[in-house]
Each structure stands twice: as C-alpha cells, then as structure tokens.
Length: 444
Ligand SMILES: NC(=O)c1ccc[n+]([C@@H]2O[C@H](COP(=O)([O-])OP(=O)(O)OC[C@H]3O[C@@H](n4cnc5c(N)ncnc54)[C@H](O)[C@@H]3O)[C@@H](O)[C@H]2O)c1
Image (cartoon, rainbow, N blue to C red; front, side):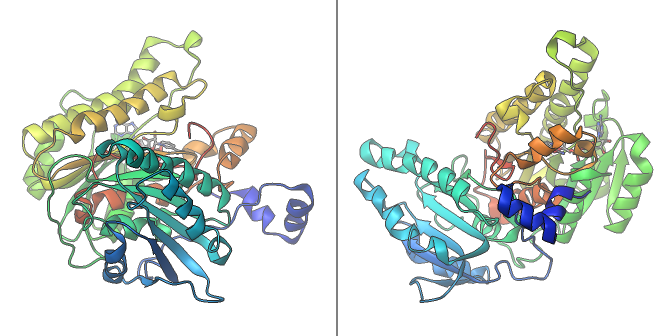
C-alpha cells in the first residue's frame, strides 16, 4: 500500500508544484529498523525538576547519547525538557527560553518530550502551570514540521525511575506517527518493578495473543511483538485461516481460528492459551470491523454486529482470561480504539460507539487490575491498509492530509505503540489512550 501523492512530491515536478502552489509537503518519516540504535544522533536535555538530573543516566541505559549544553553548530535529534519544576504561571516563560534557541538546530524527524507532574496531584498555581503544558506541547507539535513530534509525559511523584520504556519509544523512530499526545506514568495502581535484560528483546520468554492477526494492522502487531522476542499466538476467523497460518509460520508463532463473537470463544481462547502456553503475558484486541451507514438508514443487525466484534468480544474475552487467571502477573491488555471514537465520524455511529467504548473499557479496568497487569489502548487515525485503500479517492486524500504530518500512518506505527505498552518496563504505563494519528486535526 503506498501514498502516491507523497511519492509525487518527491519527484522534480512534484517539488516544483509543492513550492509554487503551497501544497502539503509530507516528510518521509524515519522508521525503526531492528539492530539500529534507538536514536541516531544526540538528545539535548534541559529544565529543572524531579527528573532532570537522572535523565542523562536513563538515556545512557538506552544507548542514547545526550548533552546538557547546546554546542555551536550541533544539530539535535531530540530535546527533553523537565518541566516538573515549573511551579507558577510566571515560570512558564522558561519553556520559551529553552526551546526558541534550539528549534532551528533540530534534525529532521526530531523528537521533543516535555516532562510534567500530573495536574490533579497539585493545587493552586502549580496545578495551573502544569496543565498549561498541554497547550504548549500540542501547539509545538503543529509547528515543529519536518516529521518532528512533540509529546507531554506526566510523571507521578515516585515514578521518576519508571520512564525508560517511554523515553525509548517517544525519542526513537518507533513513535514516527505519534505526536501531540499526553502520556501518564504512574496514574493508576501500585508500583511494580520490571527489569529488561536485553532492550532489543524486551518480550523474550513472553507469550502474546493478537486477534485479527492474518492481515493489516494485526499482522504487523504480530511481527513487531515477535521481533521484540515474544511467542505470538494469532487468531482470526476461519475464512482467514490460510493467511493467518502463513504469517504465523513466518514468525514461528501459533494460531487459533474462530469468530471472537461466538458464545464459546472466550472459553476456547482461555483453554488454548492455558493448555499450549501455560498462560499469556500480552493480549491485543485488534480484530475490528466497520459497517458504515448513516443512522437514519441503519438496521439492527449491522449496528449490533459492529458493537459485538469491536467491543463486546474484547470485554468478554478479557473477563474470562482474568477470571481463569490465564493472564500472567505483570500482564498487558491492549485495546485498539480509533480516532472515530474520539471525534466521531459521519456514517460511523456504531463504529465510533464501539471504539469510544474501548476507551471506556480501559478506564473501567485500569484501577481494578491486580498483580501488575495493565490496560491501555491505541487510537489510530488514518492508517494505510487494505481497509483504507477501499475508501473513495477524495475522502482518502482528505483523511490522509488532515494531520500535522500531511500523510497517513503505516500499520507498523500502531504496532510499535502496542509494543511499547507490552514491554515489561512499561509497568507504570496504565490507563492511557494514545493516538497514532500524526496529530490529526479532528478531535485534537
Ligand atoms: N486502518 C485504519 O485506518 C484504522 C484506523 C483506526 C482503527 N483501526 C482499527 O485497527 C484494527 C485493525 O484494522 P485493519 O485496518 O488492520 O483492518 P483489517 O480489516 O485489515 O483487519 C481486521 C482483522 O480482524 C479480523 N476479524 C474481523 N472480525 C472478526 C471476528 N469476528 N473474529 C475474529 N477476527 C475477526 C479480520 O478477519 C481481519 O483479519 C481494527 O480494530 C480497526 O477498527 C484501523
């Protein structure tokens, strides 16, 4: 699946037209290749607060080169600003003082991460100042250009040492299509230690279960989790059996074919995972469908089917796996929502209800889960797959360009975000819904 407009803007004629007509000019995004260093360049660290002093050490663990002073002529691949020390509204000017002199010294596809304190844990001026960070980072995300991304990470007090997997993801090309997001670390649950012996294989020894794994985003999730060391158990409908087996054989995985809405599906999945794998560490509810129609023309079967596949099945399967204790301690449950569940979309009342429900599913379980099990979701925007290739040209073009990166994302962008949640080192990442949408203008 390719973006023909982006390929055209790379041609000599395309470059000329983009320049003279002011057309969108998507930057070719850096993406991670296994074996590469996480960051190809230096990350400059600044700000004063709870985290700042430990940042160079944390980056060193990840093999990321860092500096604390700007060097003349140097270009930076990333900036991390510790804003946890901004305690009053007057302090906010420090953001401008730090960033303005650096923004012209960034390489393409640069990463900016601002660290803050969750506003709800503070009072008065400090609370106001920390909340203000959200507007700052979301706007900078729309300004940075050249494939750059900007995120805000709210780190709860006491979780300063739980940042490694999140920094590794947000500073590397793994987060190519994630921008303008607010991530919360330590928002729910107790603190669980989690060590990663080898950062190139964080899921070594883990079992990951992925629904809808025969193609599209699910296939890529399976491949990325396998790259990170997991044994993958893929599931899809019986009609997709041969595609599913092909993918699973390529990644030495196991497979299961059934319809997740079948009455006995939760029990069969639980049995399979228990009998063949002794349990599961990562559960990814990716299978999903759209059956779009304006509500005035809708019928109960189509409306109900979307809710059953996208929402009811993940809820029932999760409940069964938890009840039978098939999910191992420090397990990860991951939902796939959608930007439609945040912004709504014409013709998608059923789909958007199901995907907003996935966000509710995260909210409802994040505080309840025990034994270090976490739940998070991704909310993809426009991802180039067989599903979106079928969208009419004009709608597809608008869907692809209406974001800060002027392009659609790739299945691997969703998969990398899921791999970050899945990491044993993401034990403090719980209750998050991160959009993988190139900072889409809708529902921002
Ligand atoms: N492509 C996008 O732009 C986009 C955007 C937002 C969210 N999403 C979500 O990402 C997920 C994957 O999307 P995709 O684009 O790869 O779609 P896709 O249609 O290519 O893949 C979906 C997979 O789910 C499987 N599936 C459907 N119903 C099933 C059932 N009842 N039981 C078992 N398996 C079933 C299908 O057979 C298929 O293999 C979906 O949840 C979708 O809603 C996609």
